[in-house]
Image (cartoon, rainbow, N blue to C red; front, side):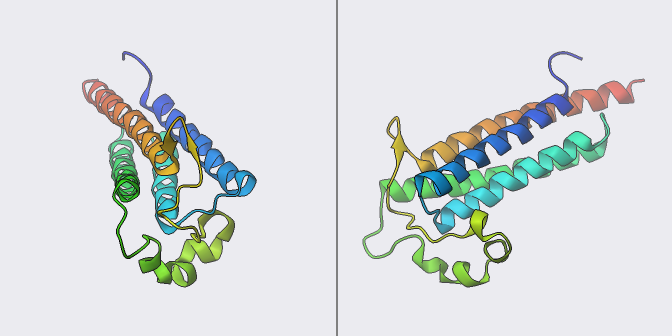
Length: 171
């Protein structure tokens, strides 16, 4: 087996998600940026990818279970990345009539995570308002980079898990 094991890559992916979440919570609770509904959906995608990466790391090396859970993590992460792409596009091409958070009125009252964990998943901010940037990139752009890094780690883990499965099958 060459390179890092799939378990090591999956633990790195879960650690990456923890770091991204820590940054998001810093921006929310220290800097004072209220997340918008699209930001919260990105958090859900990132969290799902990280929890599934941790679950896959716990699965047996060379198992179909590990491969399936990594695949599911990739789908969840890609969905969150898609929201980040949409959010970035909205910032570059804002609609004339409507803020992206306003069609999400249901979100404030009915979104279960906003009810259960309001400090993490309450989306009160305006999706089209840029209140913070670093190196010319806004929060959705940084989020997109975070998703790209997670997708890369998960993709490498999947490739390595297939190799581990093949090595196990040949013995």
